Picture 1 (tube, rainbow, N blue to C red):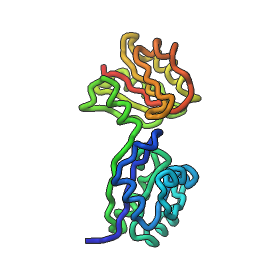
Picture 2 (tube, helix red, strand yellow):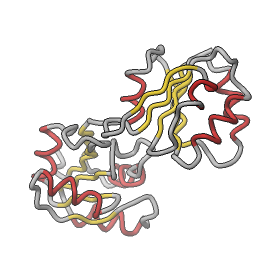
Picture 3 (cartoon, rainbow, N blue to C red):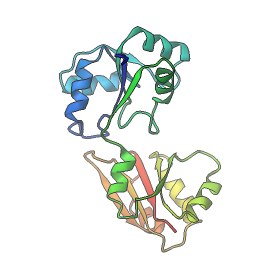
Picture 4 (spheres, rainbow, N blue to C red):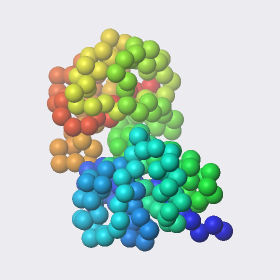
Length: 217
């Protein structure tokens, strides 16, 4: 079996204790840690006293750089700034190229903001739709689809757009439709807002990162 490995390592989304023993062991054992932002990743590695070479690799990195990293190092860990790489975070191109080269690719599971929020929403989650980050334009069609969805729907939103997005979504959803907005999951100021969009708009503070979850039709 090929002994060249790529590990997609999930890292904490806020609370640094939300990392697995396996993730720490992998980060200690690989030849290099490729990361979205070395400055951000250094905080995590320093916290766990892991001394390892780090190289920046993000969504705008060239195919040439990705191939060079994959060819230069046998055992590689990839981490994003927070959460699970490849899930609304960089990592997909790296995985695709690694597969092409015949490397073994292993997930090292852990924190994910959308999964954390869905678990406490109280909505059916045997089936759900995840939309990633809401786009800047063209939200109307998306909100129409959310309105008619037979499944729980989740998406991410940023602090400077959360109020505008909720205001716009209010025009599409029935007043009694339940929504959960999770702010700053696992962090010091973690807050979960529940109710109709109208009710949440009266409470929500536009600071931090948000997961918005809408009850199915």
